[in-house]
Structure formats: structure tokens, C-alpha cells
Image: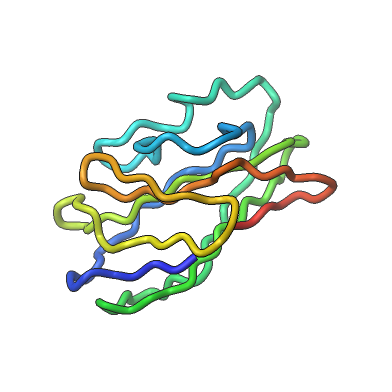
Length: 138
């Protein structure tokens, strides 16, 4: 899933969003926890399952070069509990002003792009089943 940066250097990626009882269909935009956004629990009640884990984001270098495409992979890793499905949502923002910083493209299945308030959100569509494993990737 490539990410192409704009001409502005990206000071920071604000990437938040793992949820193991995921919105089963398309993610609603604006729930990343980034400045001005809501959080995952705006749509998810949690279900009391006691799940925990982390997200591994690979493919983004420590220094982002303008007008360069990067292939990004999101992997959810369950460390506690037995989640059934997992999902994610990310937004890339410029550090200085919290404006959208680049363009996501959706080359893989199981994910989608949404735009809201001038920001581009990349996330699950639909959530993926963990099956017998402890991780899922997009």
C-alpha cells in the first residue's frame, strides 16, 4: 500500500489505530486519535474481551523524501486474548500544522481510502479475521 509524500517534508506521521474488535465493514473516517480526530471507541464498544497487542508499520523510512512513493504494510499483532477480527485506520499529517501530508493509494485488497475535512484516511475494509494466527496484515 504505497504512500506518496507531498512537496512538504513530513515532520511526523500521526498514526493511531489498532482495534481487535473492529468495525467489521468499512472504517468511518476521523477516528485515528490524531489532532482534531475522534478515537476508535467512538465506533467500538470493546466487547469486554480483554484484547491487547501492537501494530507494526513497515516501509516508512526515518526521513521521508518529497515526491517519493513508499510501500507501507500494517500488521496487527495480538499479545493478549483471542481476538476474532482486527482493523486499522491511519492519517498522515504535517507536524507544523496538522494538515494532510501526502496521498495514500489503495493497491491492496481489504482496505479503503476515505476523505473527510481535507484529510485522507486509509483503513480496513473489511476487518480481517485472525483465524488460527495472532496477526493480520494489510
